[in-house]
Structure formats: C-alpha cells, structure tokens
Length: 310
Image 1 (tube, helix red, strand yellow):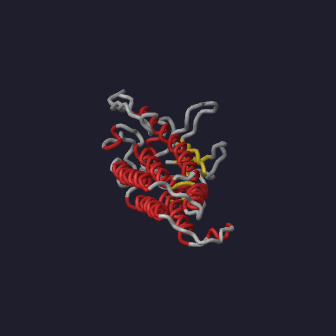
Image 2 (cartoon, one colour):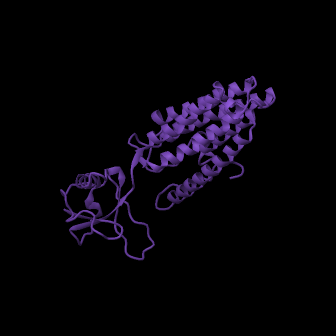
Image 3 (cartoon, helix red, strand yellow):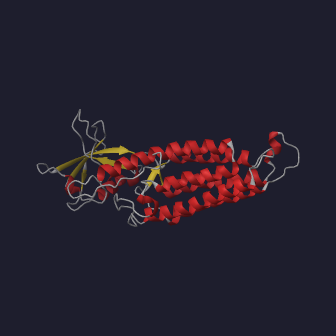
C-alpha cells in the first residue's frame, strides 16, 4: 500500500510517499517516517486524516495500534495522512519527577540553612514546633507524589512537550520557595497548638485519601495505559467526579490551617482554579461519552470537584 504524508498546508512532507505492507499499522508508518527523517521520532508525530477545506470538524487522529487499512477510502489505493510536528518530547514520568523534585529539595533549604542572613536578618532564629511539622508534611507530600509517579500512575499519553518541563518546574519550584520563605521566616508567628493539630490532622487524612484515589484511577487503566475512558467508581468517586483533585485541594487547605500564611493561601487559590478547569473539562467529557444512548451507561449525577459548591 502507498501512503502520502503531507503537512497541514498540503505540502508533501515525504517526497514520493511511503510503500508499506498491506498489514502495516499506524505505528509502522510512524517508524517509516522516522527512518526517512531521523528528527521526527514516533512520539513527536501527530498523524491525522485530511479534512475538507472550510470544514469545522476536528481532524481524525490515527491510533498507533490500528491497521492502516482501517483508514483507507474504499475507492482509493492511496492513503493521505497529515503530519504535525509536536516538538521535542519527554516522558510524563520525567516531567512529574522534575516538577516535584524541586519543592522537595527547596523547602528544607529554608528550614535547615541560614538563608535569612542574605535577607538582612542577623539575630538568632527560633524554630517553632509547627515549622518542623510543616517540613515533615511538605516533604512527605512531594515524596509521595514522586513515588506515585513511578509506581502508581498510568498515563494515557506516553510523552509531553519538553516546554512543559520548564513551565511546570517554574510553577512548582517558585511556589515552593515562596511558601517555604514565609513559613520558616524568623518573624513567623505560629498558630495555636489546637489549630495546628486540626490542620495537620485533616491534611494527613486527605493525603491518605488522595493516595487511595490515585490507586482507584490506576485500576481503571490497563498496564499499557490504553484502557479508554471509564466511569470512576468507589470511595469518594461515588459522589465527586474528580475526587483526586478534591483531596489534593483539601490537603493543602489543612496545611494552611496549620501554618496560616498568605503565601500558602495564594497557592491554594491558584491550584484550585487550575484543577477546577481540569475537573470541569473531565466532567463534561465523561457526561458526553456516557450519555445512556446506544447501550452506553448513563453517567451518574455527581459533584464535579468541590461539594457542595461545585
């Protein structure tokens, strides 16, 4: 079979096209493109079927597991695919590892080392009990996230654009330093012992719940990460679509109840707005997929992320 590879502008990307076996898959096509152009390894490629000029429909993306024959027009012996360069890619595990590694190492620097001398503070620093517990809580959280990345999470996409590493690291590392600076500051005023215990106790409960939510989500996907969309069930997922985000938000709320800094609450507000957008998109997608039509199950009535508000 012959496959013509063009760019989105219609220009021929692989001169003369590619000749492949009749049993070739989309993955075989991606490997063939890579052999002809070493720069574009398979995870950097996005292949779609062409759409008619002026059409508002989204192009159909080729599934790397499927046979190319499934995409052939019955009246043609030549398949035309549109190539898009996704840019340099990294694995999601690499992305998550580096974005979580920064806060894990940055926060203790403000606790253990005399960094405040560089900001003009020359006196003796007194470390309060809540500051020590905050350090343990913080490090446990990010160590947990790194372990989840390697041993629990299953990803629907193998890679992410390299640019996301710099964007995500800027977000996490900056907030890590911002919060650590104020929680460990020599002029920090601790909350009452009761408030500290309530905050950390509630937060730790949410951290454990968050871990369990991630385990439930893992079980929805096959080991190769291609289980397709399913309705999450069990535990908090019976009442909230994105219970993993809910517990993530509430665990940081617990941290801020115990430490009570403006920096911490700014982080919660920003993180909540980001996760709410993700949750709304996922909720809409699941309701669209599971609409009760043509034998499909009906998506149950649930809160999106923050009951009883949303």
